[in-house]
Amino acid sequence: MRRIHLLGLLMTFATVCSADNSQLLEELDHAISKREQFVNSKKEKIDFLKKKIINETDSTAILKFTDDLYNEYYVFKFDSAMTYANKGLALAVSQKNEHYKTLFTIHLAEILAIGGLYSEAISHLDNIREIEKNLLFKYYYTYFSIYSYWSDYCSDQKFSPLYRQKANENLKSAMQYADESDPIFKFYQGEQNVYVEPDGQKAREFYHNILNSADEQSRIYAMASYALAGNYRVDGDEEKYEEYLIHAALSDLKCCTMENLALQSLAVYLFQKSEEHIGRAERYINVSMEDAKFYNNRLRIIEISRILPQIMNTYQDITEQQNRHLCYAIGVISLLVVALLFTAYLIYRQNRKLNARRHELAESNQQLTDLNNQLAVSNGHQAQLNNQLQELNERLVYTNKHRERLANIYIDLCAKYIDKLAKYQTLVKRKIKAHQEQELLQTISSTRISEEDAATFLTRFDKAFQELYPTFIEEFNALLTEDGRIAQKSPHTLTTELRTFALIRLGVKSTADIAGLLFLSNQTIYNCRSVTKNKAINKDTFDDDVMRLCTVIR
Image (cartoon, rainbow, N blue to C red; front, side, top):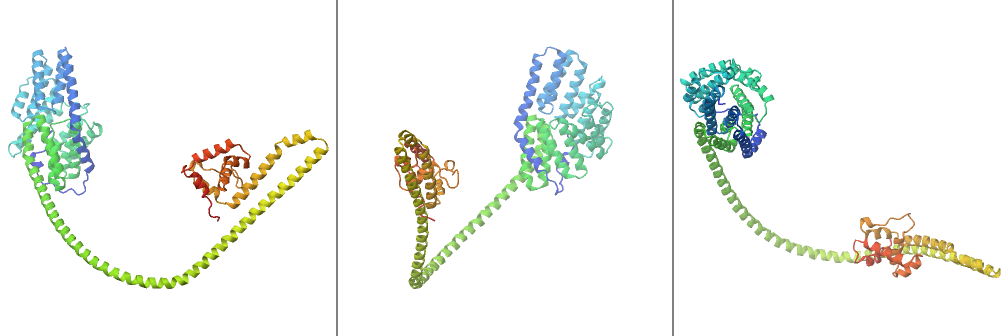
């Protein structure tokens, strides 16, 4: 619905400082990029209706589907809407269906008015002699639309007010027959408060009521948004004007309204607003032109053609100006680069001279340093020797203490075994003298003594080894992967794996020797070594790495 004069679109707009509709504009840009999807969806709906007509045999149903097709094409494609208006009228005449004959005559007047054929549109309405009551609203409202278009088209002081008055009279007549249960009724009330009984605030309330209840993808939502934008503009609220123009344009895109003013008006507004939006304005006006060509509305194409050169020329001027500024900037940058290279060359020459002098000075300083070092070396060498000697003495004392502890453990272990051997010898003599050879054989065959001996040996071995190599477990686990590291069951006891590699560290490498010392089978020791080696970080050097553990006793 076009309600704003073309001249009004070209007026100078006030600068809007507080407005920030950037998010809405981005949403509009995104919707424009999806135009083809919306058009395809519209075409699918139209194709569905066409198939329904083909398969329909009832004449009244065919008229109903023809009316639906006209309504789909009404703001989508001018020529097709005109075609189905004429088809519907011809079919209604042939079927002598007065209701659809009147309805399609009104449709024909509507579409002729959109094409700028105002006299022809009025003539079709004037030829209607009898009209049903339920079509009276549409009849008078179509008069209102035609005269409104005609008034906007004239946009002068003589004919425009005359046609506006006729439009208002017909709107007033139409409202007498409006259906209050119609969801669009409040929109008509808003129109009445704009044109017949001027009350901008009341009209605004009706438009807002429509927006709160209507689907954003419906034509009535787009119409109410566009009307609301004009309402705010009359009050000088440019921020709201822009906001609702964007809403109207978005709704037009989503419901595939090719006959629209919102995007065209928004393009002009952004063009007049600031140079910052000139690129977007140029894109929007081109989209409006594409829609007008698709709809095939020659009048709208002429209107946009008047605006398009202004936007394009301004856009081109700004682009050329930006290009000139860019060329100037490139020239200045080029000069700066040349100056920078020349300065770098001068700095390079000075640095070479400074480096040469620094080299000479460094040589002199080095000679002085060498002399000082020679003096310091003789003093420092003696102090270093003293420190090394003191450190070696401390290590020797520490090592002797370790050896003393290990000797004590060894002597204690030997004493216990000597004592145990003496007792065992006494036991053997006593059993032989008592002729208890069978009992002696049973005692010798018992495993209890060897198990006790093994436990004692292993306990002493664990203690002695950890005394000698206190960091062995930590260093050994460092050779293994994180999930393969071995934990002690108790602080002073080694596991079988740790004992095996402790003996390897002490130089016992034979599997048989290790098995004998640990009172285990050869296969057990072999499996233990293989499993542990598979957990090593570096399997190839694992045995050598074990031999290098604890090379320094701390």
